[in-house]
Image 1 (tube, rainbow, N blue to C red):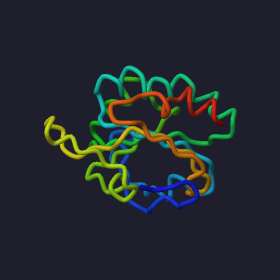
Image 2 (spheres, rainbow, N blue to C red):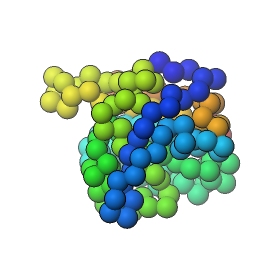
Image 3 (tube, rainbow, N blue to C red):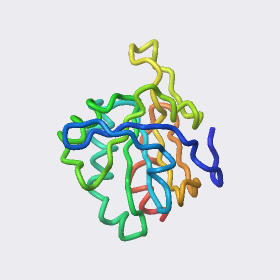
Length: 159
């Protein structure tokens, strides 16, 4: 698992913008700025849709006031799903919806979650990290089925 002080792996991600799919690397997303990336098991799932993403939407301005220049929501879903989910919660301009469709970044970070027995395949663990120019400053990984340490409120309290 990636650790504080390590650089994020350079892996391509996808985002859906204005009806098209763009590729942005994880390094590009973080380059030259302080960002928060939070990850969750799946778009449109209960805790992710009712608590995790909405918390970061609600607190996006407070995070920016503490020096966070961008916020990314990462999931092992395709860019169409991530785009539709972001649109359904009005994420535009506040949180960038980062699709890790094949789980390459999730695997490179060592933060995959095996949900095959539940019919969901390999997903991401729930976590949040603060990065400065691509280097992990802080990392909070949830215990299995947990939600708390990676919430926007917890991240905000630690900044």
